Image 1: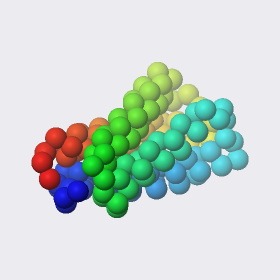
Image 2: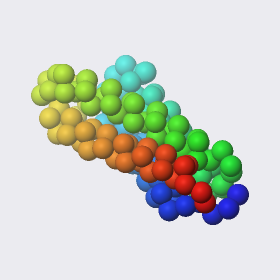
Image 3: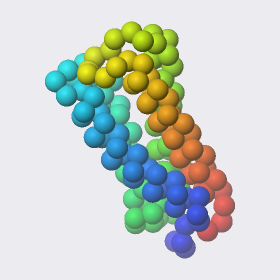
Image 4: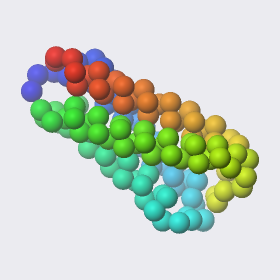
Length: 130
């Protein structure tokens, strides 16, 4: 495989950074009160997918890397969409964990924007010739 284009490189690096941040943020948010397991397990599935996308698109490139990266960002974007709008529906109401619910909703919204950007860059990178 030839060198990936700039959009794919930026998306893959963002995927690595986002995956590490998300893994650590989930530990911090849930420490001592993990809540219902499917709601935190899905975050670690997103982490694993983003790491796989980074690896196949940039670290150890393969022809299917751009597609895996697009899929990883698509999954993560959909997950943050659901999380953000479910928090908006009960805006300000307490949730499990130590975080202020309003601040948490804002952070989730900002992260949702990052997932949209990562997904758009991955799609643009997959469409452009290397």
